[in-house]
Image (cartoon, rainbow, N blue to C red; front, side):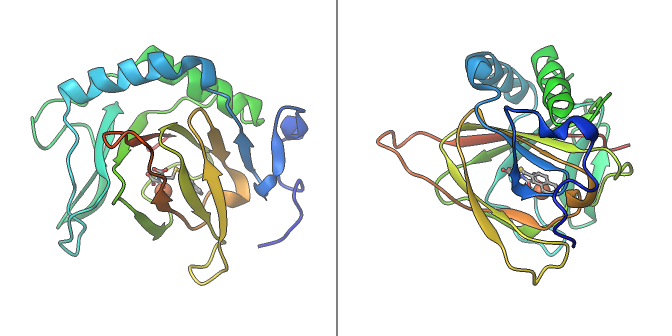
Length: 219
Ligand code: MD3
Ligand code: FE
């Protein structure tokens, strides 16, 4: 992977409010971008979870994932012994996934635009919930059909240590603390970078959890 930070990035990616040097080409941290909307987003997450409860998918190898997940949007990310894929229906309820709340669509679109990606219309939103023991091992997001579209991720609740690697699994990783309200946009050459969640920070509130919303154009 080249270290030309802006060579492949969209033109207006150098917007002042961004810290485009934080990650790599095409990847932008928008610190506190969703700060003022956290309460609305959390209420909408709770409404999605009421319709499509959080669950621990099995990996294709049969291991229970420590992160609890659900989806909203036209398609949702599913994992079981059959593999990873996107599907239009919740395998638990056999119903379509809940619609994506308008607050989610608007935020994802605005964040992508702020990072220089026009016309981002996500059709999938994965809702991840992390308790203190949850981890997400280093992986690539490659189940989406449209790899030219960016991915937008929004952090809520407890802070976490995000792992950011290169295009090869063995590349060295950097650590980045993601706090509630932080939004990260990953596109261009960074779209297939390895990444994961190393740990979630505890707090005085033993009930507290971290949520992450991941917006994708999956099909
Ligand atoms: C970098 N979620 O659901 S979001 C995932 O915090 C996932 O729940 C993490 O990785 C979480 O697949 C991290 C940040 C993220 C998402 C997609 C990426 C980083 C990415 C795609 C390419 C490169
Ligand atoms: Fe991922």
